[in-house]
Length: 197
Image (tube, rainbow, N blue to C red; front, top):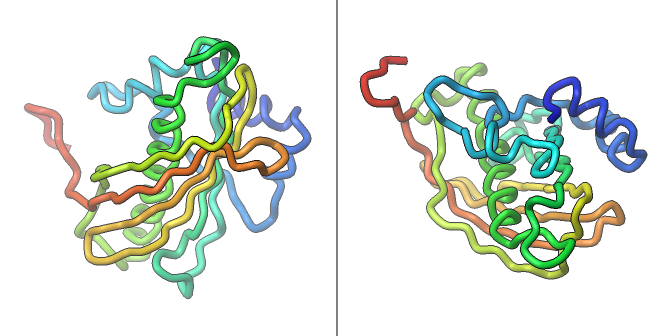
């Protein structure tokens, strides 16, 4: 199981992943869903999918913020994911449901890093989180397991509290294996029952 510096070390050993991590236009960002929380939030990615045979390593990078970029300053997130053989649907092939989850998670991470950046700049304070309204997934090619994929996301449109996001899952050659198109809705942070954050 690896996360944080261990995930960085894991991907630095793979030349095509190292090229993504050392791209000067991008910086490594936290992936909050990989951290165990006492509320139970994100337990699917922080516990269930964080084993040597599920998602052994996951690391996110984002494009450097540009306030002139429309619709939001961080235009792209790239997420490296090491998929294990306990996530198969068919033989040596990742389950389609997992691929939808990866797209949803990368898109949510992308929106989250924008919300955090904008709130630090005091540009937007009303919305503190997002939820998926819909996610359409198109499967183009099988995703072999075990293996490493790149999930890439871009925000297509932003209107009020609605965010339209597009994502792809790609192999090391840049072949698009899966495409996702989603609508997210901005919400206020949901508190667990009996909690005040």
